[in-house]
Amino acid sequence: MSPFTLLITLLLVTVTYILIHVTAFRPKGRKLPPGPLAFPIIGHLHMLGNLPHRTLQSLAKKYGPIMSLRLGNVPTIIVSSPEAAELFLKTHDTVFASRPKLLFNKYVTYGTKGLISSEYGSYWRNVRKLCTTQLLSASKIDLFAPIRREGLVQLVNSVMVSAASGEVVDLSENVSRLMESVSFKMILGGNTFDAKGIIQEVLNLAGAFNLADYVPFLGILDLQGLTRRYKKISTKVDKMLEKIIKEHEQVPKDHERQKDFVDVLLSLMNQPMNPHELTLQMIDKTNVKAIILDMIAGSFDTSATVIEWALSELVKHPRVMKCLQHELDNVVGMNRMVEEEDLTKLNYLDMVVKETLRLHPIGPLLAPHESMEDITLNGYFIQRKSRIIVNAWAIGRDPEVWSKNVEEFYPERFVDKNIDLRGRDFQLIPFGSGRRGCPGLQLGLITVKIVVAQLVHCFNWELPHGMLPNELDMKEKFGLTIPRVNHLLAKPSGRLVE
Ligand code: HEM
Image (cartoon, rainbow, N blue to C red; front, top):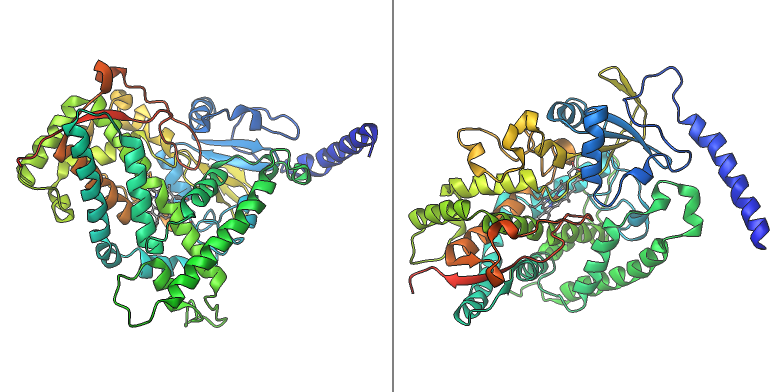
């Protein structure tokens, strides 16, 4: 096709698109939530920038806590206050409990066969129940405590060596490696051969912004080359999962070993997801593969990123670090490491973790929700299939909710406040809330707490090269989670009595 014909074709497609879509999306005579004026085709996409949670916070200051945007083709509602979040995630939870269909999921995560991307309905309900009862219940989490302990002892030992030789430790790298190894052992039984690189590419792609999800007619052009990468990685992912499943199937049934998530899921294969349903959905191998992938995606980076931010804030605020060490000295003592059983007695640690998640919710915009029917809320019309984005990051930094010292890392703000993280208190929702809230909350919290407590109890930490605490940069980058841009480096010295 000559460049001229291509140009004319593109122009025709664009004009037709505007006529059909943009006009159709303006619900006549119905009041939309306020929002800035949109460009044709791209809508407000150009406004999002590199750190969308921050841009959306500034826009919400102007247009209010329920704001209307159009991201390309997609009508989008941005929710930015605890009251509005309660309206969407609790009062009308059933209307907003679905997920949009994204190209990444279509190609990489077996369509909507997993949990994270599955649309709301009986399939999602069954998979969710299976995950919460068979993989992520309190008793199952306890079963994996030895894996967490073993990994953490190894990390402490290696940091001790660095402490003895006065070396600087890359905490970001070490924590990330610890979480990878713990997740792999828990989910796959430790078969990490070629999985790490593949999973990293999957997570990078899951966090990448794909223009074609918002302006579908650009999909065929694959301008960002993402579809090509999706297809390439999906083959590798499938090969990797097939190999892992085969290895698990070959282990003799009477072989004594800790059952990992793959074992549990394979033991449920060919059984109905819900025996009480009329239309029996059987668990097949694709379901198993999709769920394994979701468990990896849910656990791999999340806890590591929260730990990275908690340690950054503690190193930046020596007063808070000292208070935490004081609590650990009293509860645990200087002669031993922290055990998971100690965690319920560590109230200051609990406040440090809440304060970290208030300032650094690692999914700042939660995961996108999609509305399932037309609805009018607070007088505003929200059409079916709107994208709902809850800005948990902005809610955590709202001075009207958290008072004037909102930007300060100050765990004491939680003293005598009965605010928990389970999604009941809408001013603090780093795990989301309602039906789509995080099913890995308990596992995530135990993991974050034990790692932070251990590293703070066993070592004092100093910034390298005489850097002062207030000089530590806190720049963040946006993706599937928001980690630090620059790794956290610090110099350890041992604290415990030998
Ligand atoms: C501190 C660690 C973690 C944080 C901060 C976190 C946060 C979140 C958030 C914000 C959501 C989206 C909620 C929404 O859409 O409203 C989510 C969903 C989810 N998380 Fe987590 N998460 C963590 C750990 C985990 C772990 C350890 C797992 C599993 C092993 C996990 C599995 C999932 C799954 C499967 C979903 C999708 C649930 C659904 O759509 O029904 N998460 N998480």
